[in-house]
Amino acid sequence: MPNEVLVSVQVTGMELAPWEGEVTSGLLASEDLVVVPDPPPEELLDPSRAFEALIMPMPLQVDELIERIEIFRIDVARRDDGSLTNMVLKLSRWSRYAPTIPDFEESRLAEEMRIHGSLFTALINISAAPAKRSLSPPPPELNDVPEVEKQQRESRIRIHDESEWPICSILPCCKK
Image (cartoon, rainbow, N blue to C red):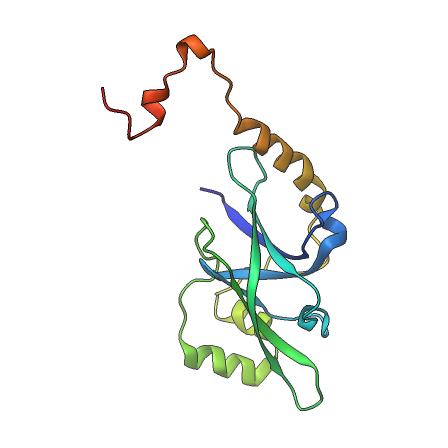
């Protein structure tokens, strides 16, 4: 398993230039939820655009799959002045990776939010988010994503000699 998982919220279709597609970063709160503590103003709320979570296991390597999962729903909190305070993104399917936010008590989070007004600061203060990592600017690892994804696609292709292809070892319905 990876040491860490980074989540980049991306405009869909930016596979070749993910550093240009990043809208914001988030934290994997469960297998199908991403928390965006300091959301960008309004961009993710445009219903004419499609977004996805680019989930990157760190360090990037061929045998740890980079995931791209469509964002199915967006829940957002808005202040009286119209600014967005935090956002939760529901993914269209589960990630294979474990959440990066550990369990915490609601009362502790509420108190930290009351004091600081920032979900990210509150999560750091209750030890639910890593203080060592900023959620912006885009991580430099985004530059390596296209090449690692290409290598991952290449590694999934296995070519067999037809006369030696063990098809029965691949198909569970094949009886000997």
